[in-house]
Length: 133
Image 1 (cartoon, rainbow, N blue to C red):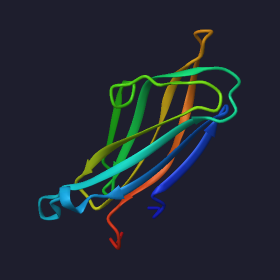
Image 2 (cartoon, rainbow, N blue to C red; image 1 turned 30 degrees about the vertical axis):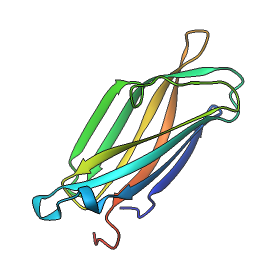
Image 3 (cartoon, one colour; image 1 turned 120 degrees about the horizontal axis):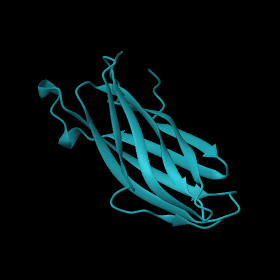
Image 4 (tube, one colour; image 1 turned 90 degrees about the vertical axis):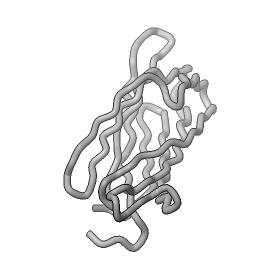
């Protein structure tokens, strides 16, 4: 698995940057509980119109290959609207049963026309520092 705890992707002018970190204070390794936080920045860098985040889809894979998919409305209870040049940031978290894993996914954005745009979230690592494969 990649050690890269940061990812960046641009889809149709919408940039998504994610940075993850291990939270030892919220983890219990002996009980198979590894907590991670991730910070997301969604920015309308080149899309000519206004977009609104409607739903999210995450794919979380642990070190053993167990996959969990999470789908839902908005992010952190919000449906941010991004005009050209605007950005939205939020933090969230994930719990794994293993010290390493990956996340990736997409945001479904709505355009003023009613059309939808699937914005990619590039894969990033969830990794306990200095953990071995």
